[in-house]
Amino acid sequence: MYWEGEKECINRDALKQLQLERLQSTLFRVYMNVPFYRKKFDEIGIDPDDFRSLEDLSKLPFTSKDDLRMSYPYGMFAVPLREVVRVQASSGTTGMPTAVGYTRNDIKNWSHLVARILMAGGVTQNDIVQIAFDYGLFTGALGLHYGAERLGASVIPISGGNTRRQVKIMQDFKTTALMCTPSYALSIADTLIETGINVNSLSLKYGLFGAEPWSEAMRQELEEKLKIIATDNYGLSEVMGPGVAGECLERKGLHINEDHFLVEVVDPETLEPLSAGETGELVITTLTKEAFPVIRFRTRDLTSLRTEPCPCRRTFVRMNKVMGRTDDMIKIKGMNVFPSQVEAVLFEIEGTEPHYQIIVDRKGAIDELTVLVEVSESIFFDQVKKQKDFIDLIKTRLSSELGISVEVKPVEKRTLERFEGKAKRAIDKRKL
Image 1 (tube, rainbow, N blue to C red):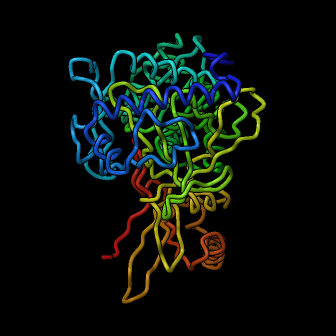
Image 2: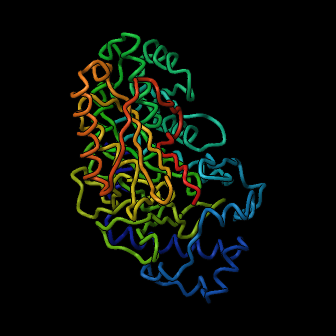
Image 3: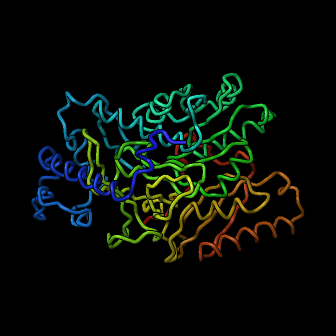
């Protein structure tokens, strides 16, 4: 199913020409209207009128989140405020938030792009969509809301929190599609189990999850517990919000809406472009944003690109699921550790619950990594030897995956904090 089939299945040569034309227009607009970019372009001798090929993209300067913060709130806007009909902001989970703006045309494009993602994930005008992201300045909830309405689906704007009420609404309103973070979806699944509600009595068919990295093992857990088809979608406030990319029902990577976003993957240290299949930092240039265009924005998200054809016949390049962020990465004993690596191992071990936390500390001159993991009640009643064997199994698996020694501390169910929004999986107590 396609929302805009002709655009989503566009010929690649025609797409490249469209991207070039839109990029040229964007470069001219930011040079004329955004002092930050005019200064950057002048410093490195770039004239937007001379930009003739997509191959020259690497000559353009990067934009970082710090650049956006320095221009807070309106310094990066490319249109007068009288043309801005919506102002929103990032969640601020990694520091000071950044403000973003939208013109009427931006809002229209945004709703169409989200509608593409929703339909690719199975949602149609016949669905009842429950949006359990927090409404407010964060772009997630409203972006999905307008996309679902554009699609013609019925929308339940319940926002996040009050998990038992979420379940009650699912029962009463016959929700067919759930949209939230994957970690919060697990909390909803746990509540169903705790309250004795048979998931088969619900009308749920689809789960469209995003806003945080999650593993294939978590996808399987969600599908089993909620009896749904779970798909991943990707977006970020600084670029637009949800609708940048999303999985189709083939679930072989997230289709990037390349007619609106030009993407690269670069080495996060050298900033050199990487080839398809190589993992690095995702960099995005907007092609149609009017109020808040960004050039080569460093997302800090780590992924790789896939260029082989998808059976769904969409022709856009796909990105693999985000494995983590460069600022979420933990450097310990010379190794790079991501929460998603720990998560994937834990989900494979019977007896562990899908909730964990990583603690990094330093004893003297030695770094230590401890994983707190919720385990089933039966583990605590096992013989001491069985408990030790269980913990040793987790240690061995994690050490093999991460390449460093790991301490494991089992904790009882419901011990670790639950998150309604983005989950905080790692705590670094070192004073570096």
